[in-house]
Length: 259
View 1 (spheres, rainbow, N blue to C red):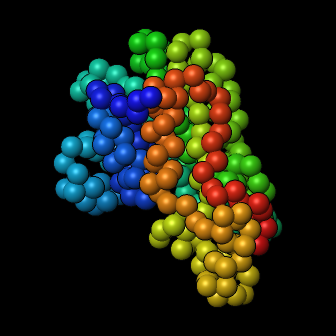
View 2 (cartoon, rainbow, N blue to C red):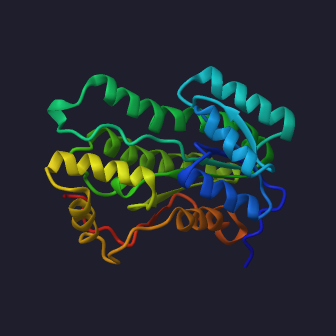
């Protein structure tokens, strides 16, 4: 059984930090050539400085022109793409449905769904020509459980599952596999911000919110970005060659998101 990705060409959206960076480094460690994109030039520059083997571009995946330009660069430099990791996403607001603005709702839809659509549409063109490819959509435990106070986020992450299963069926005859990885409560600064927002809404301390959240995880622990990355590598590798249309939860078994 091999996890070797030597020579594979990969794009990781939102790859400069957090889960995206962990996935980037895991793919590179297995021999893949990796291009990452994001909207924060400094974060991309810092990632490049620390890991000189990766390629970077400042690209807003919600803008069609940016996506087309980025894929044009990848095509001219690499001739195509073997792996697409649709990782870029935002948490959206933490608020009751009657308090969420249309602007906040739309921003979440634009990044988490429209960006995924635009990148996949471009990637599939070269993947069809070569008759192979692996697309991994990063969903969430909120792709399978209702998430009170997080309507836009939950809607987009359920949408990721719909896209995954639809594209797996549509693209399978072309040799392209499409799967989703659903992270649970992932350690790191982003989760700290989410917990802080939830704690404020609930009127408790962040420590109390953390304890409340972990009581609803069967393993009573958060997962790490590296654990998410390991699942991605598995699905992209020869070990996952017959796996498509699946949603793999890496979450310690989150039982409920009701807090």
